[in-house]
Length: 215
Image (cartoon, rainbow, N blue to C red; front, side, top):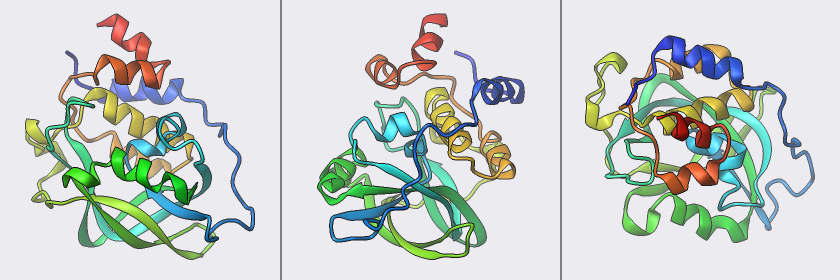
């Protein structure tokens, strides 16, 4: 299996379309008793990914989470065949992500997706900042064990995400229009050369199914 190099990522970014295919939610229901804000920084950046189990999700805004870094940890994730994303507290670092509004009825679906019931992730309520200067409280998820900090280029194989998982994150970041400097940072993370399970690729659809056929 191939790992992604900078040229591979360049081809991925070129193939992405920068037009957002979902409407920004500026309704009065944001933050109501029937909805909640969710901060996604990993695979749920991609609309088609979050909608698999959370159909009520509506894009609200991009946002940054200060004093945290993005990292990856091995949680024996056979779904993606690689390490999963997490956030770790660190002064002067920042994690960019997407704010989604979801119906409260989707909380169990989101918790199940993140493995809260089996102790993989824990729920966190964090303060995030939007580009227009608002500070909002949002639900997010964090792996229950903080991985030790290493240089990105020295990430051990067992903590490297799969090709599929990282591509979902990068495509989602591009789709949400996260800052290009941050997207440039994302593509520096090494991948383990693996694809996600075949059923996951089918759920994600194009272009992931086509990539599986090429291997």
